[in-house]
Image (cartoon, rainbow, N blue to C red; front, side):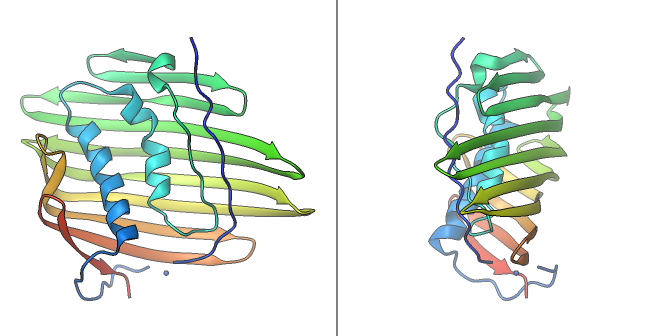
Length: 231
């Protein structure tokens, strides 16, 4: 079996700031729209009738991407997660390993009528070196989500640690993020949320800066939303 190793791009950039006190609703910026689409893509995997190994394999990296301009940006190239997954009717197990990359864990669901109760526990590690620089990043995604009659409730938590060595200096970063689905109605035909809200919270600490922020995406139609940021 051939597994394509993800490309690693680690950049030290700063940005972003979180409590549950949100400001006024406003239009989403292009970056925020991209973050909302990442959350919707994860929702699509949770609501689909059949388990998509590639969608679940990419979920940790996709939710990490919602962090936007944090201390570390991690981008993945194409990865054939299905080649290293065991898929059953209600469960997918990953045992992926290649040079500089691994994905271990599972996503499983319990089905009762129209309700699907998901449990996710995935750990991804990626590392690489270029020139005099090197980096290792570990992402742990876990959580429980309920889908009933196309309505999603629950949350996923992502814990990330990173160690970067560049230009003779070492930098460490830790990130905790959560995505909460609150009565999100998902239109499977159009693959989009149409009502409810998704709250994304981020706590990040690095050698240079600490970040705390939260965003609430409120959906009023397919690909139509407003955003409220933490004050």
